[in-house]
Image (cartoon, rainbow, N blue to C red; front, top):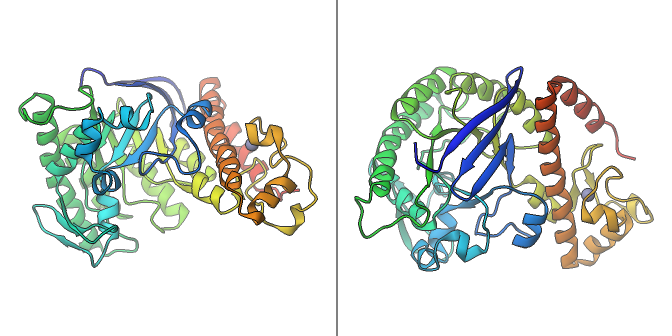
Length: 385
Ligand SMILES: [Zn+2]
């Protein structure tokens, strides 16, 4: 355990957990949603807006920040917190997912992956050690191990090989992380001395592979555990089933993070199965495409039916967008291509996600999570007026 990391479960309801995670830059109440700031910014909004929305942690991306502006440049600025002007916790993913998405532009070996930058085609190398070093320079509160991600569907054989390699890489990532923490890499001081590191469980939708991955990753030992390789196109039921099957084998005392999920319904279903942390581009990406999440399900603001609709996007929402603006106005902004469209839609969607998580936390505290979830799903599936 690193000195600045602690996780405490404050309430349980069924398999749902309400927790409190202490990180180097502050406390994160769980279950938590992490807005995605891939390149050190959440698309469409400023850090001040992200802070006002009540986000307690932001996710950024190792791969993207490594290729631009470069982690050494960010380290010289004092780390990602100082560089981006974000004082709360940051989790950095390892870049594994991005590198393995670059099929055709990468070369995989046991040592690591050589890949070409999506920006200028220049060659780069990522390995468990290099990914740990980059994240030490970025100074995130939580660093992720470098893993091999498989697409879906995938054969048992391919998923097994990727999972085994991820296990071997987990050992190397942890060794390097500990060397960095012990000051055994003198020319590379961590930008955040109290950084924590999470392992990643792989194995696609095969339970026997997930079981082996859990056992092997726990044997290495991390501050927290992520479930990777889901939310990559498999049916929702398979995702819930594997997430639940995996979560129940992970240590009770450690946080559990379901990577890349998901829709509001996915979040509720996963919390019910013992997941504590989430990240997803849906609220921000869909905002820019004109989709607003509401308590009565998603709406497409570009639809002609909203041309004269003077109601707020979500009548039950207390966000700055809903307090000040109508559907008709937001539709107009979208149609006119105004920059404010993406900004206002992003503010609403992130507020909706963060507010949903706050409701989830309260429901677990009060011991009414099942009822909360049932009522939410009932309203969410109603047709929007
Ligand atoms: Zn709103």
